[in-house]
Image (tube, rainbow, N blue to C red; front, top):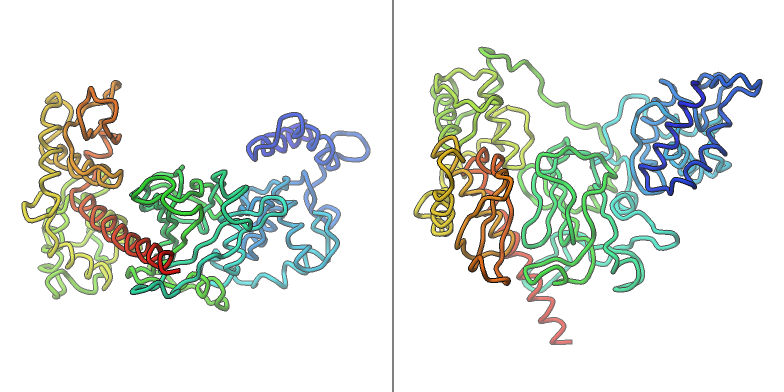
Length: 500
């Protein structure tokens, strides 16, 4: 029974990886059966019982192997990090084979003594952070995780960071598959996440996906044809996040088919992705720890008023309330000057919205963002350039049933979120807002409803109602700045073509 369960697990894994059912079962019966005791008793041998780890085995020894392979940067054939689940399946075998090829060992997918010794030499004895600027893998490795080789066709760089592009320099690295605008590049191949982290932005005029890693860096992939992740989702390195394209303000084929990969530090400064991944390994900085239980004093280095202590904390609490950031239960903060657990939760929500490390600690970067927030008018403020569009959204939402929103604040939150989604989808005005047929969503519409050529964008109503106006304001600002930068790059490219 144990052997059969082992084989079923192997079969399920192959199906999840896209192997056809007939071929998956053929592979299972051909390889997983090797783990069955040779005496025919149907008992799976314990992992490492013979000093070797192989297909079909499971346990803590396999989990340690998977963790070490991940730390060494060896992925499966599709460029994905291993799930550290303690099951030696085909993905683990492929990762072992990757290590064996790199070490010029016999490539058999079996972790014997020489393979394990080579792996121990490749991985530091102390726990290492996930590759992500720590030098765990090169840029070439990372590019192959994002665009895994397809047969004999591999990805290659087509544009480097800081290239001179007229009045501006290139802010990232461009790459696609070898072969130009032909073959696999025109079939919208899947793009995979370069790191483990949280998705902080999806969409916009350029099909942008942003992922924040554990160090607070923002990994940003532009021009995607489609996106398969959502904001707030946790992804692992190698997880599918969308498909390659050439999306821009002019539509899905505004640019040549490629990936534009740019990297920003926690302060929003551009970094060279190739230098980031190729630099020697370093110990990742220790992160502050401590309890944020209600009533405990969290580490606060300063306050929005440039002063420490209860008064600075109180002003910060008032600012977070004003911007719409609540504790984990959705409750408004009590502006009492005490930095407890609820305040820490609201700070983390603010940090997540601004692409900062969400540690609940009000340090220099968070203070700088709070200062910018105080100086930037919200979409609900008449001084904001998109306030007119906000009013259009409010007017449309006011036509909904009175029970659609729990409060006026929720309605205005939804209006601000609608403005961002509308602008990111290319709408320039909101002529009407209508509920979806099941009542859980809403549509912002540009044009007459009876006109087949009208444009519209869909939002989840509950999510929009809970998103603070300040967060939507930040998203609009970021999307506008990104669109302006890429538009300038596009114009410069067109001028160079005309001159040539």
